[in-house]
Image 1 (tube, rainbow, N blue to C red):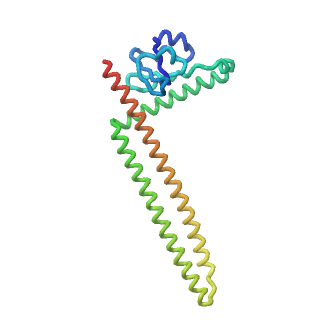
Image 2: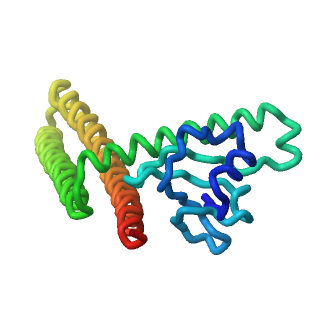
Image 3: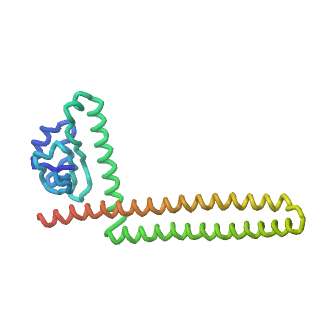
Length: 216
């Protein structure tokens, strides 16, 4: 989102329905994306970028307000679109606030997040390893039953129904276990991605703190 060089009074005049005066405090910072696509932090937002929307951060780097982009002329004619945009901005503000507070509560450094990711990944990989071992064991049992059945048939006998049913049950277990492996692998990738998002977000919070210190 784009931060603009505009004082709080001008901002309220421009977006009275979107930014509550009680939410903005002296020293609040703004985060926006400039025309080059880079995330920018500062105490003001360029006037040319206000219409693109931005985030207001408190001194801890937590998002306390999300100002949505300016509606197009066509969207302004549609009050439903405007209401939906404001509601989406409020929902995004709350999501980011809860996320930031959770990160600051659980972690002190990026290394803490990386350690937590390592533990989570290790647990999931162990789970997958156990499932793979179970699959090999089940397949070995099927091969044993099939070998027994083939031996019975070679001797002119008829394979008993119980043995055939056991083979079917084992093959069903193999299929279920292989599906579990696929699900665990997917979960592993999702957990890995989620921790990376936490790391990226935490680094943004640290950037805000570092910038404030440098300005002081």
